[in-house]
Image 1 (cartoon, one colour):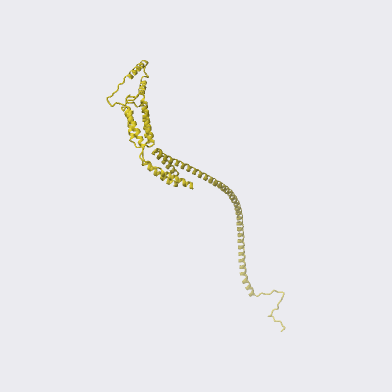
Image 2 (cartoon, one colour):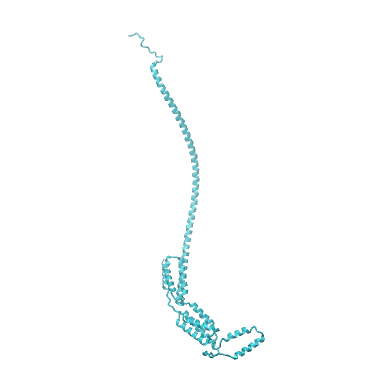
Length: 351
């Protein structure tokens, strides 16, 4: 039992353990994959490290660019802030000027309204004066053309104002103008001028018993002999004296009315008064007085003045024509225009 057999080896602690050959083959099989795996890991670590370095460099560049961009943005922001501040200051100045402009505009608007009101008031006063003038011309003088002119002037002023509230007044004016246009025309100024022409020629009308006025004959003779020599002037004076002693006159027709010496002056003055009285009756629209005065004046011309004279004939024809004229017409009143103007005044005062 104590005998040592050669098949059981004795273990020596000082010697390394002996690996069996099968074990060595197993270890060699595992070492190769481990080495390959380690190489792959090392290559992957190297690639990863290289990518990380590149990523770090890229990030560093981006950070640097971002820093530069940030500094530029900061400068731009600073400039924008300065510009915004300047714009705020300008905007404040503009707002202040705008406020001042609005105040001035309000003042100007107030002044404009005052001026417009004053202008409208002045124009309304002119319109009222025109309507009043038309009423006076109709009622006092019966002068239809002047009344029409005044009403048309008032309507033209209302047309320039162009206000809706003036339409009733314009309607009333249009109605009155239409009524006046329908009236027959009485040419009072023309008749008055014709009478004035007859009055102006009375002193030149020759009497029927004298043939022609002594004054006119004397003036004509003086004009003729003024340029003659002295001896012919003496003969002319002798001839005038001889002519004054002899008068040849025809009495084979109706005997003309005789006038006492010095009555010719009074006849002319009375004829002038008759015509002036007819003129006053014309202005007063007194038809009967107008015709009576003209009839008397015409009869005096035919009775006491030479009807062979052209001036006398023209005066007689004029008087007959004027006697046949109608000077009195039914004139309408202008109450519609006056009432519309009064209503417009009341509405304006109420506002």
